[in-house]
Length: 588
Ligand code: ARG
Image (tube, rainbow, N blue to C red; front, side):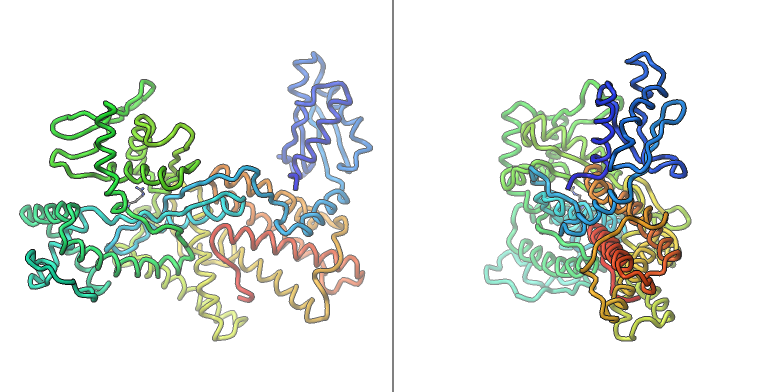
């Protein structure tokens, strides 16, 4: 379906033309004075220069041609030359009836779908998922859902950190603790045990212990680096152990992501890129891109227009070991081979921006990535506690994702149970759904690149700009609809009448902007735009609800019209919430 704002613009454009002016001046925007009008066109001001006429005269000429328009109820020229517009309620309800009849709620699929790889999540194997990884998962998931909804081929890749020093550290620490394990016996040629020699709990304790010791003990750290190197060379016992670590850790990660309702198409990682490294390095050398600098292999990536220094991209360390840059470049080789995507978008902490500038430039310069594949970086800010420092537990430790979710769920459970509107057995499920909305909406309602404060009290409130408030509104609509159904009503019948009141019209105008909002939010990779939109819709719905008798309405066609409006508002809100990555319960 065409966008409502475009239909309006077409009408005004035609009026400019009829009045003898260039139609390009007919662009319409939402009014910034809602007290005066709903939409406005400022084109007469710009046209004034070209035509050497007073803007008010031009505006007057144009509105003369809009008086009979079916689109507007009023079109006024006001000084110094604005055109103020109000939409004809009948035209508006007609548009919304089309939306209701469209199963995609007016949002068309794109004409030319793109293949877009989304690199998000990025957890590190054997390290517990903490809130730092939360943002990537939440933001990436929402962008993936938006793209899919618009018809793009979105491929989400978790890109595990599974190949670096943390692996060598774990291996070294395990050898300290259990030197008798067969994995360390180089003469062993049989099959390794099925069972992992540790649980996830132990694994998560082993890593921090190893990491702490390596900071104090030089010899230990060297052993860990050596173990990493041997693993990467394919030492048999280490590979077997690595697989065990992967199994145990990935099982746990999957459980956590499921709880977050975050779902990846690919579970690839840094280790998958390893096989692509040797050929890539050769290619960089042969192409004359890579050169040796103090033993290391580097590629220059600075550009003349740089205002700050962009250091060379390091491909191999002097000992031949690969780095974060190396695996990211090799992963690009792999992704180009496997998918030849139109775009690869990374959702990563903004502190890694320099790394991605280097990787992108190097990939483009050396032809690893084609001209026509776009590489984008969506860097997000830090999630802070109320003290303005990175979010911690009450005791000051690193907050694990599981614990955060459990605490918020518990909080929601208490609130829901005290409301007594939900049966005991449904309360935990409902609490989980509402908790997820609190966490995700709390995050997504901020512009991604900004740091934000995770304020549990505010995020879990049923009032204000929060996930629970949005869900509460959806549930309110659902409960009116189910009372209507209980009374024998059929919410699929009837159609919208032109709005009878101001609140109703305001809600309708907002709903008509749904497709434009979704397209724009995806275009700008900005889930926060969906949040501000649904917050406005929820507010508009609640005002309408408070000023309107819905179920007790005597006029049956009017009542049916209200019910249809509720259906549309519910569908728009639920679709939006789905795009953000959570869902509304039936009751709460
Ligand atoms: N594992 C990394 C980290 O924890 C994030 C990975 C981001 N993706 C990438 N392709 N580098 O910082």
